[in-house]
Image 1 (tube, helix red, strand yellow):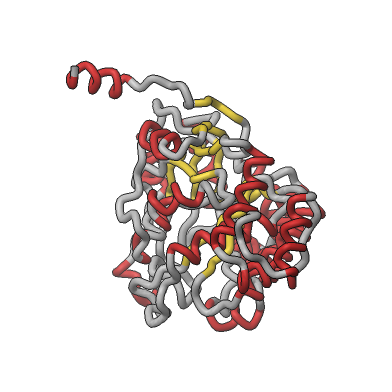
Image 2: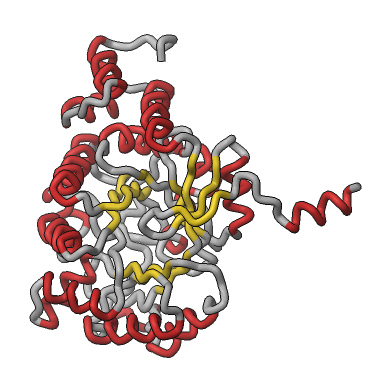
Length: 383
């Protein structure tokens, strides 16, 4: 950092970060506006290395997306289909979803991620029964399920409070919440891109309630559309405040807006440089979040690899081609699947340590010195 030409304000921010002081919203916005990529990367990498060294996390997971039929009409969504366009969508039966789980019965996966459209006929009791059956098939599997958007609708339809609904799902076997549906919390932006679904305050209330019940969750932010830097920082500030209060968030996941086949297709996608800048500022600002995750199917494995030097210390999981949400929006990875070996090689290639984790970041295995049978066979053939 000493080789960069910095303004006095940026120098003061750097000094605060290096000394472990929290930066404020105006300082966060200034980083976005004036911070050069190299400067932001150096600061973010300093924090990342202080927290985790070279340790880089992934998990073995798969997705179940019950339906893409949805009662809501988010302008950025390429995935969902309204009820009137039902013929373009899918609705899995209970048995079809359980068959997906059975396919992984003998695999070393630790998590199933269940999210989808908000379907009026798939209510909280339907999903409670699904979770119970999943736990019968694979009792140790961690069930991470339902965005706050899905939960708000389910609880409203069932005439349950958020606490009652979440407690019911927890009793059925659900262990945590994903972070989807947060988008951008600023109400003026939200009104333009997703006016009819749960509000920012409802999203935050649902996650706070989950934390109070011992159900941790993730947090996301959709960036690179009509929002400004101030809106991103405001979003992070609201999450940071809730994390101060509950400590219940596992990780923060910036999600890049993709413009294929949606109502915001006229908006150009931001560059990889902007992606890396956003990861770096996220790592700097979100000082009470232990982990920053790059969702590799959305940005592609190459950008995910680069992000590991811009504050990111987690690149999600193996996925195993079990998600359509971002592929349908034009994500870099149209058939998102990486083997454990491929994920580890991606991390090792830039000198980081690949660590398999469970959903709540308990370490399962360090793959830094792991010898893969495929490598041994390849060496033998080449020899």
